[in-house]
Image (cartoon, rainbow, N blue to C red; front, side, top):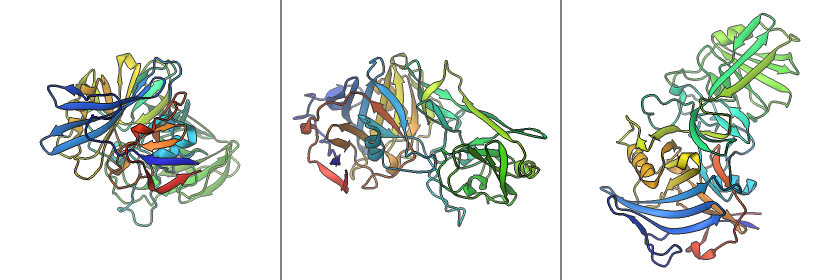
Length: 421
């Protein structure tokens, strides 16, 4: 049986593995409970005091210089789907994981339109490019600092180095009348006048949401000028006025157009030859083997300008250090009586912990950090909603699993009574 446990972390260092707390004298940041999860992967807790109260958090540090260590995107097998982080980690055998990108969590502004659960930014898993970014005005999450976009990611390249990058979609729909620009790949929102492609990796979720909102207003009404075209083995196999639901067969692609994009797709006829090409291009050296969306909060060891300093929340972050050879994964604790951080404070914290570059990931009820051993997955933080929230993706860390050290699980309890077998 595979059991998911919650580690109720003590707020003092005494009696925990790792000995006395490590202290940053100037900031009140204390790290304790340092332990090895697997070769090249360590876990620690930390606490700090801010004017609002106590902040308690959890940190996984990954040594990418260790050839036994790998990092990849965890997701539930479809872009438009969600699962708890512990399940995503268990399914792939990850030794550590933290929740990833913000996502299409609700659709209160569009009655009758189902939320897709799909993430905001680009996603790359095991070198496979799963999706591109929604327009900036359609994203969920905190306000981004100047210069950031939904195309920003953190990832690891084939050179085994972590880096921040920006992944832009390049693609086209080749028709008998010429080439049409492709403006979306497996994403929950398309640009106005755009055409998006949906592949088997999208899953069975409805594509209707893709035609709602505008590039600057997520809550704007859904477009009434839409078209959906199914291309099977290079030929038009079906045409519809409105986007539909249901999985896309391997070897097929569904094209969804809105406004001018819809008008161009309506020129197609059954049986016509159509081909679709797409790829995500980054700015860094070489391709990314793994990538997940998140906006930059630290660059070159310093917080970026223009970060929000007002809203306080439980938060998740990922950062890089040592020239990309170290990856930091952080999640705050959402237990009652503990406070969160602003995005600006989170950037300060990541820089203090050693990150030269870092991004903000989904927070609030999504913030979840998990470690795993031969006996199961341990949810190290308290999710602020009282239980894990299903999420579209997570950052997974892989290394030979160490034997479990049960002394690190103070007061183990099953999360919501759930046991995986």
